[in-house]
Amino acid sequence: MGITPVLRVNPDDFAQEEIAPAGRILREGGLVVFPTETVYGLGANALDETAARAIYTAKGRPSDNPLIVHLPDLSRLDMLCRDIPKQALSLFSAFSPGPLTVILKKQPQVPDVVSGGLDTVAVRIPSHPVAAALLREAAVPVAAPSANRSGRPSPTRLAHVLEDLDGRVDLMIDGGECGVGLESTVVSLAGDIPVLLRPGGISLEMLRSVLGEVRVDDAVSHRLAEGQRPMAPGMKYRHYAPAAPLTLAQGTPADVTAWLVAHSKEPGAGILCFDEQRGLFPDAAHVESLGPQADDAAHAHALFDALRSFDAAGVRAIYGALPGEQGISLAVRNRLLKAAGHHVVHL
Ligand code: TXA
Ligand code: MG
Image (tube, rainbow, N blue to C red; front, side, top):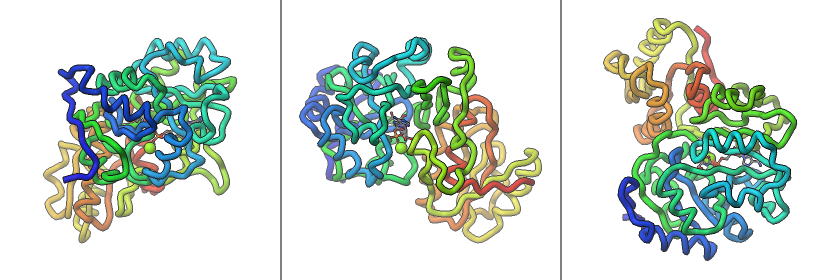
């Protein structure tokens, strides 16, 4: 049994009044965990400095890492942002509500604690019905990072949140499993050219179909040099890290499979594979599949749960394949590279 009260809500069938107490807690300065279509979020009133500061304490998060502000729709965008370019409206109308976060220049009333001292703010309109209902009930913009302890994989089920944050927040809403399974795509429109800062469910190809040219920040695919700063402060941390070291292999599918089989015989080996390969590692201490090899969306959905399972199984080392760069695979690749500390073997 947990310490924090849990409100169970069926995302397919609930009444707005079920969410009212959670909305009230947010309005009054409390912390509420809620489901979104990407991962669970840890919310607080974004315009209440003390409430927003409490998020950092609950997560153990460095205070220079800014928060995403969640809105139910575009109606109050100009309360948070200024000099909003037309491209922002095109992007929101193409992909919101949904797994998209846009960085824009901020209005002075957005507290520094939310923007991490930057002159920009991140805005997202989630599509999850429970998140949308909560944002309407709260009637305040809601700052919400992923609801994990800093450095742990983002939570895609309430059980993950309980592992990390039980007793550290006022209320948790259990709305079942998150659909996408990886955090939102973050794109900056605060400069001259749009820049992808974090890949997610809205792919680079989709962004380019609306915006034309989009640059990809170095931190998406490369280890940053000592002292180099990513545009999204959060991208510098070794996130999503399982306890055991993770090594990724790049090569032909046959070579990668042979490499996984060889490593699976080491004592305490954890293998991250696809459904088609599952039977190939009888000696491994623990095997996790990301789903059918060709189903990229399934890989995104399964990834964080798989990383947490390796921790629970207590493996000594984890081996997996480096994903490609098309569509949502770029996001899976980015999270795995970070989890692996960019440790890639080229076969
Ligand atoms: O899917 C999501 O985006 C989830 C759900 C809960 O909405 N939230 C989430 O928040 O992933 P968080 O705090 O775990 O990640 C936010 C990322 C960080 O990498 C942060 O540095 C970046 O967005 N970010 C936030 N505000 C920014 C800003 N003004 N400029 C650049 N990067 C920013
Ligand atoms: Mg996070």
